[in-house]
Amino acid sequence: MGRLTTHVLNTAEGRPATGVGIEVRRDGELLTRAVTDDDGRTAAPLVDGALEPGAYEIVFDVSAHFTRSFYDRIPVRVVIDDPDGHYHVPLLVSPWSYSTYRGS
Picture 1 (spheres, rainbow, N blue to C red):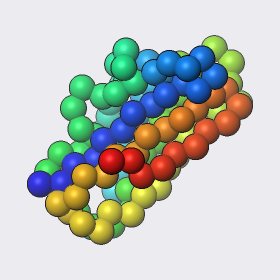
Picture 2 (picture 1 turned 120 degrees about the horizontal axis):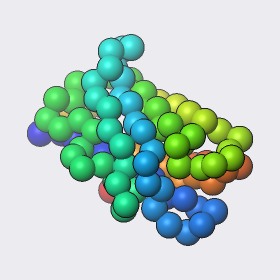
Picture 3 (picture 1 turned 60 degrees about the horizontal axis):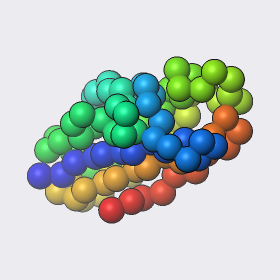
Picture 4 (picture 1 turned 45 degrees about the vertical axis):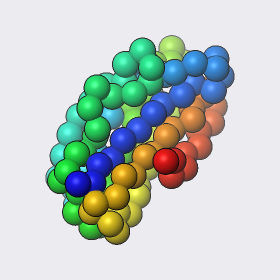
């Protein structure tokens, strides 16, 4: 069964980003909401076993983590082609920049 996971890291302070709200949508439909813990991860996969091929949007609400930031919500769109795959989407974020990649 496939799954979608994440890890959010505060690159300005060199530590996990806690308290980041996350929403996952597919075709505009809300699939899940989660919040990062002290390790910058969610308690469970964002999507577990219910992956379908198509475009997913992961929205990271970093406004609760940073007191002041150029960004408030960061949308990341990914395409799932293997419903049995593990898709790990880390977010590296500071108040002034962000990057993401497909992790393992």
